[in-house]
Image (cartoon, rainbow, N blue to C red; front, side, top):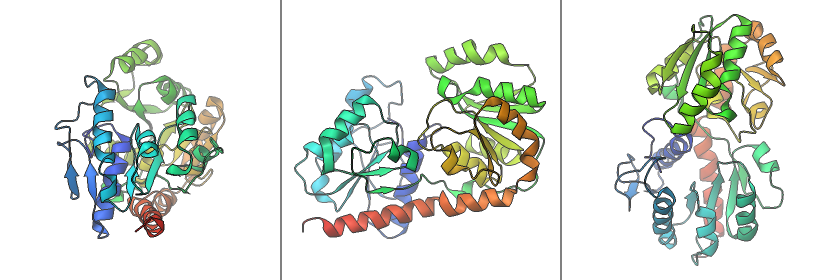
Length: 334
């Protein structure tokens, strides 16, 4: 459990914050159920004073306590927007007629398939990509709504420097060691903006990343937002050597918002986020990633920014959720 918005890492929490603030700005009455150290212009309701983070004691117990407290109040609202771990279970058991919209931020695994099979049409599901939606055709979907970012805090930059950037956690699925390989083989300097705070992240770094480093890379641990967008904006391109079917990938949208194209492996939602040959290159192997590096200069930073503004902005995301919430509240019993 993290604060809303998160203090550092926390893509889901950042999306929740943007959606909350966007709905308030549009004139909706919003109650945010989050830890007491969260910040919002909505009404904040908390049963947990301080977010325990990923290493909090009895994390699942804290999550269940927090989410149960929220769902016990479901009848007070027109719509419940659920972005939590156990929300689908609690919504399916609840007696309130209030529609519950559950956004599926995580990939489908056996456990979630079982839960959603039981929940059936008692909840309204939002996919964050068509790839995620296609991953489970057994359930009903209310909409596909891409995650959004705040364009105002992702400044556009037209002039680029001759280095590549990797941004992400140090984990097998994120492929930081593959980014090192691509940079070395293409003869480009690499800046790595990494999160390696948790024990498993540090273990992955020492086991997989450190042995392949040339020593020329710039390693920036847990960068501030200002550091992150500065490096993203100056980079010739973002390397996204994802090793799993990521349901969305906010990092790609953040880079493109800064005018920086993406070279990504064609897994998960990458082909939906990146327009191949326009805002980056969608490739099928590390060899193809290396081959794409010299072609980055062919791409338009303006096209990257425009695609993000049109499809992946906080305003676009909020408008689509507001439309869905309004349609469901009209259908709900008086």
